[in-house]
Length: 380
Image (tube, rainbow, N blue to C red; front, top):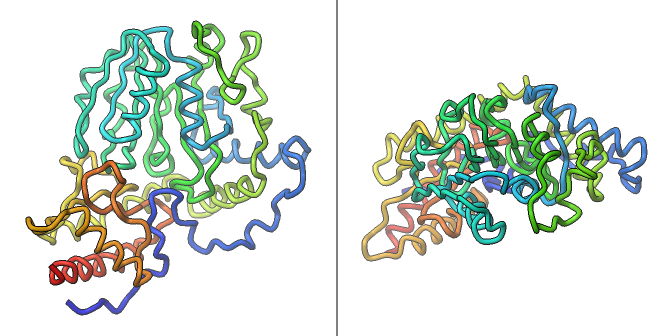
């Protein structure tokens, strides 16, 4: 097969950190409050803008609290689990590596009582109807390493008495989030926004705030960066721009740039559409190519952001080595960077399809994947 003529304009298809928005350059950060305290008027103003723009663009209810916290989505979700779990039983759902990590933390490190772990292999979802809404429910919205997501929030009862804790890091800005179904939601700036890592977002419903103010886990010391209450009351500064620790004002400026880009293109409905268009381009190609398929076993639960693919490889070859050879070819040609499957996932490709990716770049990439596949086949 001949090399294709057209290359993607942007070869960055990593699933995190993800591609910057179209048209981004370092010059967009010239207004950063560098060398200024995050406690200064300008520092707090910029942090508050990040919070307010998230509320506006994501239609987060006014009575929900939005905070900026340390350590990306991981820090935000650990903060939620360590601060809130233990009052009642926990139902934790997992179908890929990050959900499995949360389940391990809950059982091994938090040592919560009455834990039900509903697990499914890569490509599938657990039976969502099995969850007990009297327990706290812990789940990822979008399995970044498996390309499988929950289809919607309809499986979460409005009459639940437990809290829902949702790791939504590769979902926010790509799907319409049902906030009335979510009590704790976390994500990072580095996914669909394509902004920088290091900082996480946490959103709390009034029910989650009530849990924080009324429940103290027994014999569980909380590091300072996990503490959201003081003397039984929520620390409101976390949710108005007075962060727990020192944030990078350069990263804050980059996040503001990304959020303003979202606003300028039409808000979260536009970013959802961009992600869907990217998935549609891959879906059309998969439908017409007999050696590739989605890792997800159900089209209704395919991720539109972390698009995970499986490939038919020769029986005499090791699948991971075969695909590594393909990925190396694409990297060397400057076509696609970082598209190998996650290390714990089945052998395959993982293409980021979030809103900062142009559909034209996806369309340019796919013939190159075909070229790399056939070239690797011919080398065996």
